[in-house]
Length: 457
Image 1 (cartoon, rainbow, N blue to C red):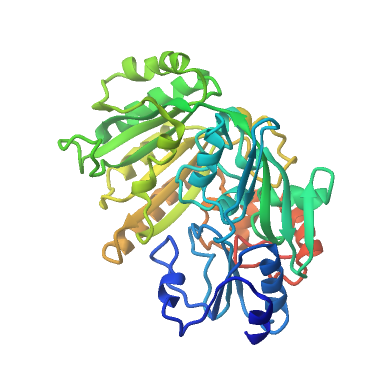
Image 2 (tube, rainbow, N blue to C red):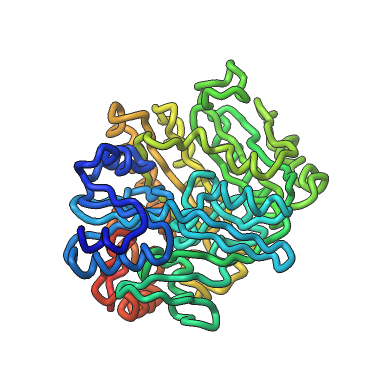
């Protein structure tokens, strides 16, 4: 500890410090771990010093890397080890002429949107503004613009990385291309990314976006209509079907609050007038009128923050996830059956529509797996605290198991701690083999193992 404090500019937090319990909290309140040290890095030099400390005087201790702290299974925290915290590194620089942005590893999605939308530009990234940009990007990055512009990793031009031996390297298509391939979907396995360079895309600042809501009893019928409708919608439209009890919120009429509902949440990344016409069949021809329609022109930043109240820090979250090729009748029936059993007012599960620009990138161009999937289920059981959590976790596992015959893969950012075999399934055998070779080159000792881990070959 004394060795690190001599050369480290950031804040070092130990268990005896008065802020320790606050500093060790992360987004998922069900995770309670006690690190031996939390090192808040102010820049690349601090990251290098922290890594060298972890491989020198503190060798053998587990190392967790935290930026936004949104890891579903809480892998940004560890017991008895070192947390290298990147949250002070929040710099963003937008070049509107070149349509590029550089963002440090502690940036949150809402902060990036704030800077880029000032110029009518955007990086497709996530659905909750307090998510960390780093973890979301390294796993792939799905969000409201993905069918038009692709995943977050599809916008990456370069990254700066501190590797396991404390070296600082850059990676791009032309420089360390093996590492650049690996970080685009392979998570934090190969080092600590300290800065990202993104391509920016024109957007908004006004988009047609928001949920259109029906009673949950309409789920199976609505999903069958939705399945056929989305076959012809343009790439500008990305949707997610969400089942839940309607939240208590000012924009939800009191008669609907707490009632089981199914909603199609839309975002049209094109002219509002075109979007209105694309959505007309959903509103008028789906077989029954929606009970609430909140899909309207609004600032993109407002839409990006829509789910924030549903995913606050400190609630207890449990996730299961899977990809499916198509919403078959059996998938729809099983989904509707289990949705009707939701008990917690905080439990919800989006079914994200994929395709479009995601599928036009070659499967082998990046480490991300599953570009050909039609939909990804993000099944989360959520409670305010420990009361009822076991029941919601059992419910989430039940829906996931019911979908087992139709599962084709999984998005790594939606995995809990499910083991090496499940991680391999996310990439496929050949891509997983290639990732292990990249891991062997940049982290042969598996220092960065608190993640969806890819062991070195």
